[in-house]
Amino acid sequence: MEPHEFKLTEEGIRAVLPPLEAEIMEEMWKLKVATAGQLYEILKERHPEIRRSTVSILMNRLCERGLLKRSVETGRGGMRYVYSITTTREEFEERVVKSILDALMNNFREATYAYLSKMKK
Image (cartoon, rainbow, N blue to C red):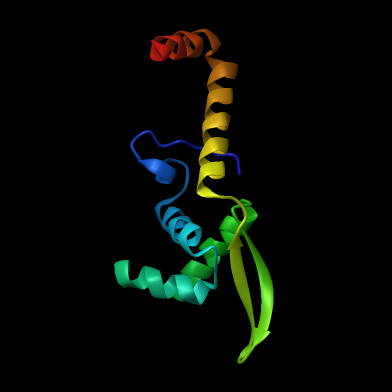
């Protein structure tokens, strides 16, 4: 996942993911594997107005971004999607930092070098 936007006013992964997607990833990094229904139960405690379909849509969006993958499981009641993480939090953060630094180096090479050299001291 390459961040296409970086929000300077946000902290952590919320700087590169929308708020609810960031919350879903926070939970998925804890759980490793979950269904949309399981995530819905967790999120509705903090967001009573949230709909189960919203959670499913956001989890599918995270699959499109490559942060989650899904498989089909058959059990009582039919088929359901089971989502799992594709990357650890540490790997995700490392990719974000690399992407941002690469963009800074491509667009503001001298200023980036100057700033980074000051930080080493």
